[in-house]
Length: 278
Image (cartoon, rainbow, N blue to C red; front, side, top):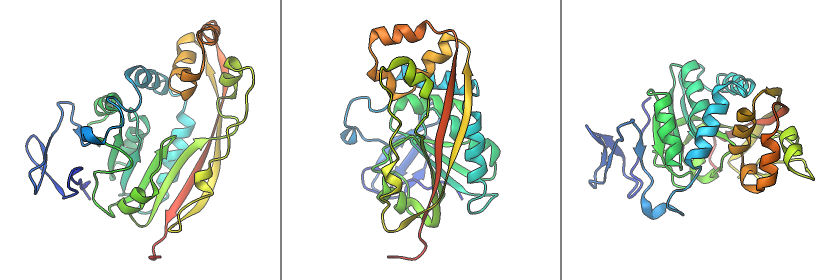
């Protein structure tokens, strides 16, 4: 079923038109030359350019395109393919970044309709160049420009969750697949830049779910990456929040490394929206 959009201004359904989309109240949104729709009104931004900047987007694209996170891709696709209708789902990637995972899912689950959104315009610009068969949106997770009850599966990879909005756009019995860092995720990188390294804390979101959701399962995805160039090592740093917490000396120290064997550890959790109303 095609992805149904709604107006971010008045919440009326958006209808496609030649140049973009329009609602019954004549709020119009032009589709960019690259194919995406910007459905994030300026009055709903917390800053002029929210989300990841161009440097972070480019670093993440270079790093992921080398296949360092392929075990995560495989685990994600395997899990999503077992949920709901295995051949045809409506899938939403919430906080999709530059679309690496979104595109992989669409390519493997060809019969599914896929939508990806991110609050960062540079990320969606990169995503729209990666795959033309996905509905790409600049949008906020706290005000999804999407009609109610249409998605079988929502994917959230290291991104913010809004349970109320997720519940609204999910079908009854629909699923949310969340990827979060395990305690030892990127431990070698963190050891290389910090004097004291603490394990990542457990994700409290999974322990404090709203009443209309329940945790179905959770598993750990582990792999070891061999980064064999300073570029790959610095790209990994730049695509993570750690980039903003290290000083110049720590960055220079990391730049001197020719290779880094680094642990990849993520928690893949499946949450289901209950079919029965509260």
